[in-house]
Every structure is written in structure tokens, then in C-alpha cells.
Length: 271
Image (cartoon, rainbow, N blue to C red):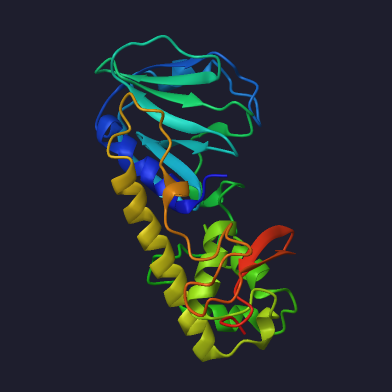
């Protein structure tokens, strides 16, 4: 599933083609996504100017003269900008066409992604209400993690993957950040010190920032490409490396299911 760095890489890739452009039409070839897409939205969107392309958690937010398109890639979705008028493929479900003739094309073989249109304030939208802070913002730090973790018995991995705690720390990057901070992913969230949470907050920021940077260099252009950042080519320390040597101590990396997800960690370095 695309995680925050992949969504941010997508945002940075498509924004230059969309920002400041006027929408001509929304072409809906397959409306049956996670929630139905109404082809009639095209009439409401036509003539609107795209003010910005932003991100909140794993949602892409396209500001169209104060209204918003909310785009989520789901498990298999991707976006790319088509500049040559090529015909859509089997799983190309939606085109957002702008006044340059280019279109933002959504491909999603499993159709778990979705597109929503809203004219209500984003802060009150049910998909965005209750979300925690952005992990790369100043609002996110070790003190926040420490305060919110008091009395929590859930694993620290499940705690940081909860979008009410902090957004965008998905499975891959939770394992990587916990390794960098030296914290065992099964340790109860409420039994971690303030100092160790400070280290974990820094590790989350470092891990996500590096992943965004690598995504930006792996895929230089979202125009006429497959729209997928090459995040699986990143050098990961523990994720998906079960039974291989830890890069720090050479102990074998372990795999366990924690917070209902495959979790990788070093039994010696992480306590």
C-alpha cells in the first residue's frame, strides 16, 4: 500500500502540471471505486481553477476554487500526468483534464482507492476529522507521543501507526523508525520514557524525510510514466529482511505479526 512518502512523492510529481490550470472535464470510465464516483461532478468542476495540490496524511487534496477533490490511492492506485493523448489502459478509471490538454489519470487495478468531491470545509470532512499531526511538522515531537501514550497498553508499533496519534506512519516506516530508535515494536506504548519517545519522534522524521528524498530521486517525472515511485528499491534496514544480519550487530532480523501487520526488528538492538 502506498505510504506517506509515496503519496508525497506523487503530490510533488503531479502538482507542477495542475497548479494554476483550469479544469475542462472529469472523465469517469469506471465509477465503482471504494465509493461510487458521480460522473455529474464534471459539470461542477468544469471551469474551476486548480489553486493548489496538497497532502494531508495519505490523502491528496486538490483545491478547485475553494471546493476540494480528495484523492486516496488505496492499495494499488497510482496517478500520472498524460501529455501525449494516449488511450487509456484497462484499469485507467478516471481522467482529470485541464486546459493544457493534459490529464491526470488514475489507475487502480483493485479499485480500493477513491475520489471524493466536497464543497464543505476540509476540517469538517469525515475522512479528515480526528487525524493526528503531520509527522514532519513542528506539532509532532516526543513530548506529544509521551503524553498520548500514558496508560496505553497497546504495542508502541500499533500506537504510532494509529492515525489519531500521528498520520502517515505506515507499516514499513514504523518498523524502520523503531529500529533506528532502538525500541522493540512489541513494547507497551505506556511503558516508554519521555527520552525514548524523543528519540522515536526524531527517528520517524528522519526515516520519512529520507524516504521522500529517495522517492523524489527514484522517479524524476510523473509525466507519461507509470506513476509509481520506486520506494521498494530503497535501502531498508529491517523491513522484509527476516533472517538476514542486522546492519548494526549482525544478529538475525526477526519477523513477527504485531498490530496485525508483519513486523521486522533486531532482537538485540531493540529493547
